[in-house]
Amino acid sequence: MKLFIDTASLQDIEEIASWGVLAGVTTNPTLLSQVEGDEDSIYRRICELVDGPISAEVVANDVPTMISEGKRLAAIHPNIVVKLPTCAEGLSATSALAKDGIRVNMTLCFTASQAMLAASAGAAFVSPFLGRYDDISEDGLGHLGEIVECFANSLYETEVLAASIRSPLHVMEAAQIGADIATIPPKVFHQMLKHPLTGSGIDQFNKDHAGRLAKQGA
Ligand code: E4P
Figure (cartoon, rainbow, N blue to C red):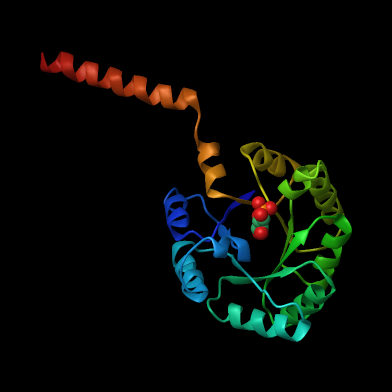
């Protein structure tokens, strides 16, 4: 499973990109509202930091404006993927953009039936949300499993991008279920990395190495 980062923070993207683990980036209007600066410049800088699909979300609500906004975003950089909501207008705009060779990530997808519509409209990625299901006491991972199963039994080329990830457990289970990609908030990347036995092991090795050097110097 490929790992994307789910943020518009250039500082966080730069930090996690330096680990060499990132295959792409997703943003949304909420994440952009949390950072300063002009959106197009932010997208351009993200494209410099990570060589992979970079999702930029359309905010229009009618089909013609979704299409023109999508084309404008896609022209920023070849790696830009246009993000559109899973609704009737989003499907029509996805179909039109896909016919023009523009990759679309259909977001706010909650069911297998929505995911199949997104794939049929030509979406390159579909983003099932996990955490928002969990927030309303429903099984987000269960719904992800249904989507992966439906896609395995079809000829869709659409990649399943698990989104709204809240924990390392979500990431692990999304991989076990067979998602192609998980988009992960910076905080969860740090949680994935940390383990108390790794930390104490590094401390012990450093201490033992220093002890050996001290003996040699004595
Ligand atoms: C990414 O593509 C989604 O917009 C994002 O993962 C949503 O996450 P949230 O449910 O934590 O806002």
